[in-house]
Length: 171
Image (cartoon, rainbow, N blue to C red; front, side, top):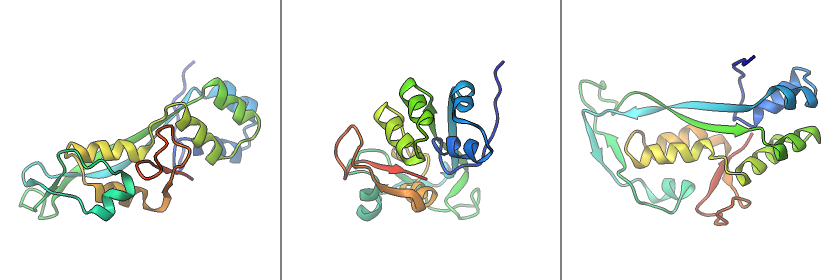
């Protein structure tokens, strides 16, 4: 059987700790969980009043040094009630229970260790999805930072190896 469920956590790897909080033993987590998809909602730039803009260097540098993209923000209009935003768009990350992750779960690894291993195995963090959505003008980098502000920190273990260009969200 396939069961889909919801949990309230800060990020996808945090689901393991939440299940442990509920009393699930590690072997049961490994047997039952295939993957975890985490999402947060960011405000969508209003398509009716969107204009190109250059994000501030300070904000953009918290996320990446790559300034390429079609960054947009809303000027404000009647359709968006002068907010510059209309609707929401999801930013996501998927945590897959690979054999390496399962071994870490069995060894009672922390959420931070699980996240680090997942990133090493290719997990794209939620903030990265947000940056990509900002690059194509769906949201702003300020929105991405606002959603992740409490949990942004340098990720010195990222495969890219550039601590300035890469950030991560952690529990």
